[in-house]
Structure formats: C-alpha cells, structure tokens
Amino acid sequence: MELLKYDIVILGSGLAGMRAALQASMANEKLSIALISKLHAMRSHSVSAEGGISGVLYPGRNNDNEDLHAYDTVKGSDFLADQDAVEMLVKHAPSEIRLFDRLGVPWKRSSKGEIELRAFGGMSVPRTVFAADKTGFFMLNALYDSLLEHKNVDIFHEHMATKLIMDHDRFNAITTIDMATGEMKAFAAKASIIATGGFARSYGFTTTSYSSTGDGIYLAYEAGLPLKDMEFVQFHPTGLVPSAILITEAARGEGGYLVNSKGERFMKNYAKSVMELAPRDIVSRSIVTEIEQGRGISDKRLGDSEFVYLDMRHLGEDKINERLPMIKEISMKMVGIDPSKDPLPVRPAAHFTMGGIHTDITGNVMYGAKKKTMGLWAAGECGCVSVHGANRLGSNSLSQCVIWGKLTGNLAANFSSRHQLSDEIAGLAENEEDRISKILDAKGNENPYDLRKELWHTMDTYVGAYRTTKSLAKARKIIRNLKSRFSRIRIADKGMVYNTNLRDSLEILHMISLSELVVEGAIRRKESRGAHAMREYPKRNDKQWLKHTIAQKTSRGIKFSYVPVKITRWKPVERHY
Image (cartoon, rainbow, N blue to C red; front, side, top):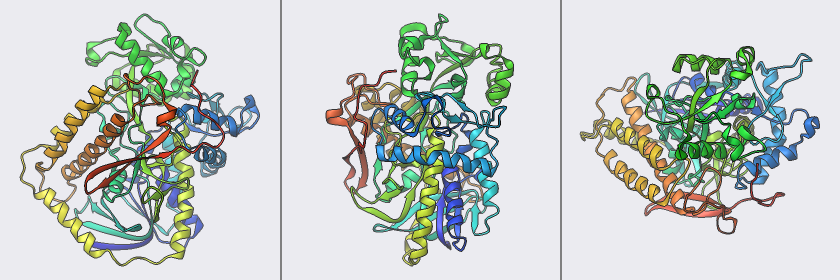
C-alpha cells in the first residue's frame, strides 16, 4: 500500500470540502493539502443544488435582519437546532455570498446591479440568492477554478475511501482505493476534514445522486465516533415523477402552485398564511395526506405511484426561461412536459439527511459525549453541528456547507501548523488492505444489487414522510436481515481497475448500516418533530424529547444516548404557518 503524507487531508470535494481546501490554503500556503473525491471532483453532488443560498444581504429591506433569519431557521427546525450554531450561520452567510460574487458566481442581479433575492419555504421574507436554478454548479465551479491556482492543493479524483484510522482520540490517516489503478493508498496527515455529504441514496425515490451514500458518516461510525440525530431525514415535496429528479423549491418561490386531482391549491388547508412556501416537512406531509385521502393523480405512463401537480403555467414562458431554465430542460427531457404549457407530476422524495457526525459548533468531531477528537473535523451535510435540527429550511444547506468549510479549513490549518505527523499508521493500513481483499475474493451467493433494491423498497415503504411503530419494526427486521446477507455477497468483477462492482458493494454496506441507525433512532423517539412524523405520537413532546439522539458503535452493538439542545434566545413554541 502506497503511503502519502500531507499536512491536511480533506475527504469529499463538494462545496464544504472545496471551501475548506481553499480556506486552509489561504490560511497557510506552505501547508500541503490533499483533496480526495470518489468521483471527479466536479461531479460531487453539490452541483445538483438548484435554488440558491440564504443570507441577509440587505438588512432592513422588507424588515429583514439576522435575528429574523435565525428565528425562521430555529422555528423551521421544530426547535431542535442548536441556536448558537444557527446564530453563527446567519452571521457568516452574507460575507460568504459576497466571497462567491468575487470568485465569479453569476448571481442574478436587478437592473440597478443589486443581487436579487427569491422567496423560499419557511423564510419570512425573500433572502435566497441565486444563479438561475444552477446555483450549486456555479458555486462549485468557482471553487474548483480557484483551487487550481493553489499549487499546495493536490486533488485526487476517483479515490474511494475505505477506512478512517484513529489513534484513540487522534486522527491518523484515511485509506482509499484508487479506482483508475485498483491500488490502495493511505493518506496520512496531521489534520483531516470529512466533507462527504449525506446518505439520502439509502432510499430508492430520492433527489440525490447515486454517490450520496454517507461514506464519511459510516467511516466515522466504524471508527467508534458518535453520530447525531440520524432519524431525521428530509423529504423534498417536489420530486419529479417517476425519476425523483429535484424540482427546486424555487419553482414555488417564483410562484408555482401545488394542486390536487380536483384542481385545488390544497396548501390552504395546511398552511394558509404561506401556502406552498411552508417548510418542507409540512408540505411533504400535506401532499402525502392529499394522496391518502383520494385526491392524488395517477397516470400509468408515469408508473404506479400517485402524485400531485406543480403548476407553473401562469408564470409565463419568459420567466421560466429566465429563472428556471434547468427545470424546463429536465422536465422536457425526462417526462416530455414543457412547464410553461402543462403542470408537472411531483411527489415527496428523500432529499437531505439532517443527522450525521456529532460535532461541536466549530465542526470539531466529538470523540465521546463530551471529549473532542484531535485533528478531525466534519463540514457540510455529513457533519451534524446541529444547525438544521429536525427539518432544514431550503437554501440554508449551501450556507452551512461554505461557512463550516471555511471554519474547519481555518482550524485544520492552525492545528497542522502546531502538530507533528503521527507515525503509527503502517500496520493499521495493511489490515485494511486485507479486509478489502477478503470482500473482493468472497465466494458467497448474494448479489449486492439485490440487497440494495430491497433496502430502497424498505426505506421508501416503511420509513417515509409518515412513520408508525409497526412500519419501523418491519424495516428493522428487514435491515437486520440485509446486514446478515451482506456477509455472504459475491462480487462478480474480480479485477481491480475501475472495479465499480466493488465500489458499489462498499456503498451498499454503508447505506444498510446507516439505515439501521435511522430506524433505531426513530423507534426510540416517541414524538413527531420536523421530518420525524409518528402517527401514534402526532404531537411534539418537548418535555421528554427536546434533545439530540447520539448513536455510537460499541463491542456490544449500538449505544444510544442523548444530549440537550442548546437554547440561547428562542424558547420552543408550537409551529404555525
């Protein structure tokens, strides 16, 4: 196994990872930095972010201010967000947006040259900055181009991470498979940042790419590090039927309507004051309720699932072409529908995972309930800081990625400037090479893709926008069986060069393991809060459940514990929209 030594190694090349690499390099240009991606870096899932990034660019306009942004976020989170983290998000967001302006992102501007803002769900006033409906792509492209100018940053494309090596509470190294050669490499560093995104691909009907398999979260869990709030999975209301490709919330922010089979704008019955711009958990459950009560729409050409319509015809072709061009392109390519002429079939799709690696407010990964790791941070969707609580507001995710990318990049640079590289690596790395060889050479009879298909069906069917004790118990039984069967898989491709069969199998293991944590955490949380809606427990229970779930791997299985939510200014109240 080849051993490469760096000052900082960053795992994941989306917005959080690239922003961290840029910040670390700017903080100290003498540091050597490795940025590792299992794809080509510009294919990271951040490019799929469509609608925009939130921030109070113009305080006072529409009576907006940072306090209002913070309260909208806390309320949208169903009061599970740590309020000190939320205050950090709203404080840093405007400067990050202006940084990306300087990096060349083509923000939509008014005739006066001011950056324009659009409305998003759960936001009291328009405060989402956008570049048409390709915001994530433009932001990632700007970061990538900037990083290419930093000669101390090496980008390793198509390297699949397999193990996070810790020496007690100190980061040591990350092992990877170089997909192009099949060779294994160990990246040793003084400091590391995990920025691998979420795991919503554990579901079949999801807006996320096939690469969103929670790799960094799984590696942290296997290393004995705690995960937080894994039961909270967000469903985006408007996944295009039948593919689940994202139809951005900006389509509703620009004025699109949701209508049922009777042609009614049904959100008036669920969130009368904001209609289609209620938080995502509320809109998603409203759509499910409409379908369950017989007001869904069916079209056998689009599969067996019922849906509702997203109607944008009244916006006009010019506005759609200007502000939602990619949505028009996607709709016409995928279902042959021009949204300026006909409504789009949509239903809720798994979209974002609020849970992830347990960190403090700076992104420092926790080693236990109170102790922090040395030299290890997590940023972006994979790190649960927790700024989204039980439900994320749209456009806050990009703010989170770049803000905690910046924070962790600075901290990692400072740490690596003061510490030496550990030399306790070689033996652990060789053990990982043996583990991968055994998986590749296994002579079982289970097809890993059959396991993935069954996992997707299980999560879609039993762990959706509404949950029941019975449905979760079914999911638990099936997932435990899938874990057992995975030990008997057979990988058909025995080569090593671009062995996507091996990569897929490792991802399937990650998804099965993380899905188990979703289900186990959900079974224990006997309330409804944000994206976790239990039919037997329809009310939020602050007395017993105003706390974060912590899951940690031990020799005896999963250990669950709880830590309090950080309340700084806003006491929990019942949500009304």
